[in-house]
Image (cartoon, rainbow over the protein chains, first blue to last red):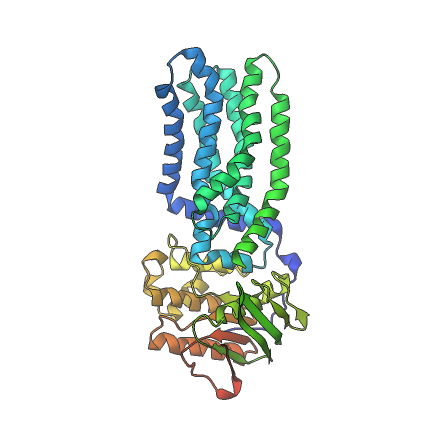
Length: 237
Length: 204
């Protein structure tokens, strides 16, 4: 039944790319099985965005000025809503322990999970943004800029938010602590992301904003999986 | 060879256990016993490299086990007291993912055969969320068959198992040690295994 004759695998056999793919596929499969939860998060995004025109003056110019900021704040809040689940369900059912005991590098597994989180929460929000921008009467050019800024910026939310989600594992009231921990870190992303459309409206180029968002994304891509893996290990200790 | 030298663990300010030493050669089973809260699970997690001991050290195949060392992650299979199943996925899908993550992808036919061996053949397409505790434990047993690791660390493997399940567990552990594996298990139920392979360690 158990054969031990086979040679022991070396570390080189457990590549980071394979680990990212495995973890991402696993989480995407799980997300597809619990589509209702994803729907709730997207619906929340749509509702928050739609509340502002109802709550403030219907004046066209005011709404168009506010639109990029509102889309961005709603994306932050919706991301926050889904983050506790990123590691929380695995932690509760014991499968996080199995991930940590896997011979694959944990930072790669963690980044695969963050990738799946973005694909299931960030990307749908990016896709919905042009539609939602319509109710604010935003120019076509600005719609494109806002959508692009969300495309570059929302992965940062999944990456940085993932660190926070891992750090708050096993903490009572972790959800609200996560918000306190992560929202301040989202501020630069918010400023540069929402600022891109403002720059274009003011007749300037948005390239500085996109460069800063891109730089932030690169830093988060390198740092967040390592920090997230370290936080997972602390949570399991 | 699994070696523990003078291990101690603390929780908060109280010592769970101290001075735990043992040496397990290939083909041996170590059963950990002790009252609740005596640190059996902690000891298993220290052996798995998930938790750092307060003092002392663990050696596996003459290499020191540091927390999350790659070597121990390649060689040890830890079956925690929760089976680690995703409720949304079927038993078969759970096993496929667990095998892939362990670096030993299993073809669907092997997974099916393992599930049939633990008498879950009829339930293979049910979501794990609807399985009973005993059935979930049996999925863990199927994992022991599919993922080939020399060192098994089993946390209360007998919990919720019926008589047939216990016999199956004993058979699996028996076959594993006959093939040269090492098993460390926390258990309150006696496993029906040859006495010469067994070592017992009481904590607390």
